[in-house]
Length: 216
Image (cartoon, rainbow, N blue to C red; front, side, top):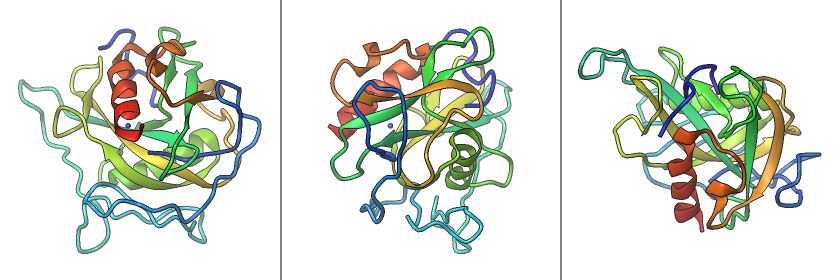
């Protein structure tokens, strides 16, 4: 995820690959054509496009793009919208979640998070997340439902004005590897107590609980 979005302090269905729970990622292509929700949350066609991107319906605008709220937040700070993926081994019946261990910045190094990054101006949440996962992990994904946060922009992060929207995702092509921002990737058992399985970035702990509640 983008550097500094969580900061040093803080207070969720996804792509799946074969692997033992809790083991570092060694390989991973996941099954395609998993069902996606019919609501208005971010979704993608699970078939990769010719240019290795994916189509999204993010907020169902007529031209297929999604609208991003880049207006100022109350009390002044500009909105920093971050998107993250709850990557699982199966969309209909998930049992494992892929997490990434931060390598930087120093304040976050060694802590675990949902892979993803900053949504750029004019970019839909779905398109941003597809791009970030390609850059960070080297994979193409199909997005599922959103793990809805407590605000219209998702889950608040430690940095003032920064919010995280988390979507489930399924890997449709590629083998995940820690290409950027992470020192390790690991499949974790999707079960109660997941928030204590590794040292999550503090701002992500409540999201981890929400992911488990939504998917299990």
